[in-house]
Length: 385
Image 1 (spheres, rainbow, N blue to C red):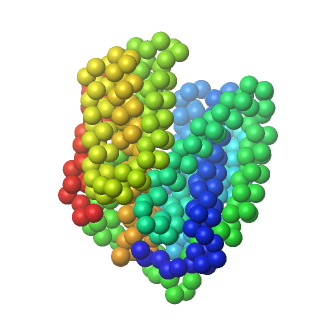
Image 2: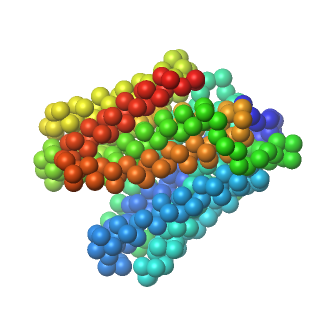
């Protein structure tokens, strides 16, 4: 691995360091889920139509994309610990501004900042996770992402509770921000202090072929993941013809198996290797989508979406782990490079599905997703992993 033993490694046990990094993943997931759980409330507060809300929400990926080159540079220059502490604290504070926004332009600006902080947190916390994984014989990266998914469920539950007792988003978000900043303060001393002049290197280096291949694997999987986030409910409504109470069943099934898959992926990878893990992941995504498209009934579609969730669960964590071990780039810069390639897939997935659905049918567009799952298998097979 392209890292040195740090003070965190020397002064604290691997379990303590792992717990601190896991706490950072948890808070990142909690911040995002808290925002997502109150979108409808904020839409109503600002009297936004669905179309207007769609335009406003586009500010989030804009912030994410703007952050990619900046975060890659910062994680190399100041280290992932400082970047993570600053970015995650900003993430929580930006959450407060989303709840305080009273005008659309304010919400747009705050979402850009929220997106910037989100991606900077993502790159920094994954760099910390790669360093932590170096303290263990077996892979542990996927379990960190499992903690993020678990935080998503808890954040959604807290949001539902806040809505039920009529707590305004502003006060809800203030609470989450306070918890976030306190957690950052407690965890700070246990994180890897990975910045030193001796370990500094160029922030901008063209990724080599192995990193490009890893990026393409994640790109294909992220197309599937982005589409499942945005189109699974619509698929159950229009194709499965599910009753109103069941239209979110596919989305829920996918998210549940994605979370569970992340807690077993490390063991699977340790036993069968990275290449086989990625091949199986792509195969599960493809099989699940083919089942859901070929047999669009309630039971079979739920089973299909469960397979898709299991398939997409481990690809990004495994790819980040492999990128962090690059021999040509520093871990943070390598993760930023792979993240840049893969995140494009997350952005273009939903609109591509919409375009294909309009030109053909929604079932045809989901066949395209199955092809992306197959590409994960193909790229993983050809990659030197």
